[in-house]
Length: 509
Image (cartoon, rainbow, N blue to C red; front, top):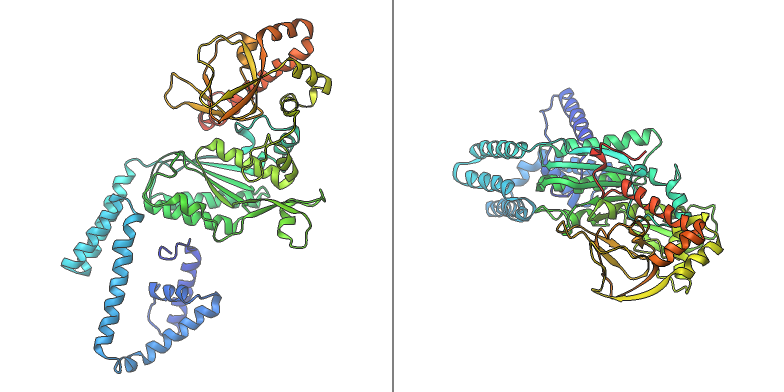
């Protein structure tokens, strides 16, 4: 399994081993054992299915019967050279090529076994291996935690993409098609060879229970944000877990949250392994004219008519849980109504998002922010109160602590919000978002510093003077801004980055 990078079914292996020993005993044969060499021969000979296995068994039997006679005709120098070649090949694979796949503590055990075997022989090396394994296990068990912290559906979580269009919101709130189909598994502590087997078994069991209940998720998110350490053995098992889940469950997308910008912090290249698309085709999103046909089914049917507007990878590594939830939500929208993502620049699915060139872009964003409650005439009134302002990269929109003198709607470009009291606390603000509404309505000072991140940004501003006039002359329109503040605060309560929802003492109700 390690050589071929696959996830073995140990239950099937042990059952097959038991049957073979039972048959051998009935016919007076010797007890057998699992042979590494036969498995490698099967794989490297491109074996497929039972007939390939039986062919190897037949060849093995022939060698067992006629091997001694055949060996007498083989020159000793050839047999010795073959053994030397096999020995060098196994040494390179086990002691040299494995260096990049293990951390220092694990590789020190491999080095110890190699040195002891060279100096004192096989028996001493076995004892050294046991001592190395126990020492490694003890060192990593000092910080042992149950690796699975908790699991929940995405129905309780909200990403920062809170200003989606009403059609997209309708899909995400649907019990059968929406966030309920997202399953988030939060991991914690140190994950190493001593607990990774329990972790993978628990994940498989959890998904099995959901499948039996008819509630199998479409998107599974494995969140490693709270994982403190990940050894190479565990990383390899996680890479195999990805292949197992995609093959044996109806999971369409598997997302991994590393919690770090540079990916998983381990010697083994886990980020590359889990993002590798080999083994299962990506999902093609088809913009099909027949709305009654599910887009995913259209993509898998070569006779279906419609253009492929996106290909979704079956696995992906995300830096934060928020990024993973945005991606998962976009996938659910694309699977149901791809035209929403294809034409609406509010949505942020990276493979289908387009930039709208509509001159009424600001009105379109206002319609999204205020929903169906605002009529076209109401939107026109609000739009008439806004004044466009152009900014450039590095410009400061306002400083933390400044007086709140306006609300701003981001129409083009990208901003970044910085909390100056905490190093590294930032949040990216995308087009379609509004900022400053809380300060405008409640009169509080700016809570963060906002700067322009993109080369250029176009913001539409509602000044405090116009806001005060609006509250006096047209309270109905002003009420929309009040509701926007409430919606914003509600989003903050449920946003995954606000706090860890698994540890909250005060939950949204």
